[in-house]
Length: 308
Image (tube, rainbow, N blue to C red; front, side, top):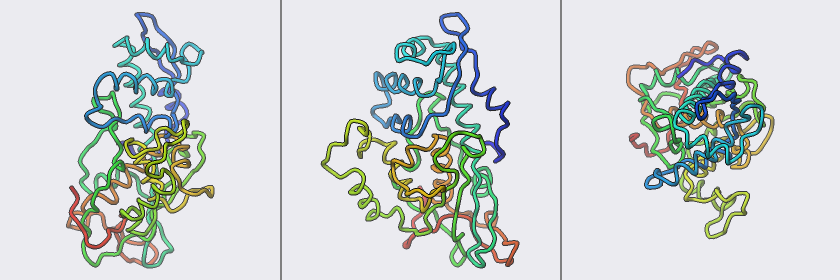
């Protein structure tokens, strides 16, 4: 995981402009960061993480991730040829993972002091990983197929020390802003209500955006409970309190985000909500305005349950 400073234009150019050997001949490829709706719904759950499902999903993902090959847009036929070339595919998937990881971990978290509400800590995802002893994870299995997001399924909230104040607000400056990517939003805030992802609230979200028993329109074929990626998009929309510039959190607004923004928020929710806060005060912050102490995590509903 990277520190929270945006990559320089030269670094981004190096990550997106690559040479790929295709059938033994070098091809100049330009990568791009796709939107959330283009690739997150492609995540597969068992028992579907097998052929032919994997190849079909990768072919679609390549069309969205590769902007051009030798200056021309990538066609589905081109993507099929890349899939059939092990060296070309390994080169492309490795470059894709490097690009997504380099940007997704660059978000900045502002944790508001709940005592004076006049000071915010400036934190990175790496800070949460170290402070909460988070186990390592990868976004892609063996660098190939994306794992379903953390938010695909409900997880119990981690334990919090009793009597310790919790941040009154967690807002996030999104990686796309630091990376200079085109984006519909630059910052978001998580809902302070610990019931934001309660079963009742989630049921309301499904009824509003993807009612049970109704066939989604063709352009939103993935808007269904059986799609792990869409479940995560819907649950993230429920977990967010605001988007800036002003927009209502919804699966549509989440889907319009560059996927690096989604991955940043998915990881942060996992770190700040799902994990236990270890004893010893390591994650405890001291406000520079009022000298009060607090935890920069999301509040856990009562009764609390241990994280799995």
